[in-house]
Image (tube, rainbow, N blue to C red):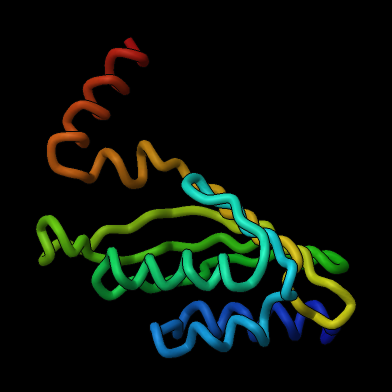
Length: 147
């Protein structure tokens, strides 16, 4: 990988997310522009405080959440990351590790700060099917749709 400002920014961001702990959330300001946009299957927000609240909620709702980046593609000021998100549910079976597989499209400004963070993952397959009660219904619906 060539050393460019975007590559350096991607490297810092990957390391940040792979090591992320609740006390690290104020450091998002070193990675994201103040007016950055964030979108995932559950949220669409703009601004650093709103993005920080999403990650704070992640730590409130889940036990031991962490990201493992498995691939990265960097082109100019854009990047796509492929990742596994590992966690345990706090409210359900806390002994079982869950994995959500997804990807993130990132756009960086000239200062190497994220201006767009868009997560792509299948909430039905990767999350809802793993929940008690709802999971059985989701798996049934999937089988019906495929038959």
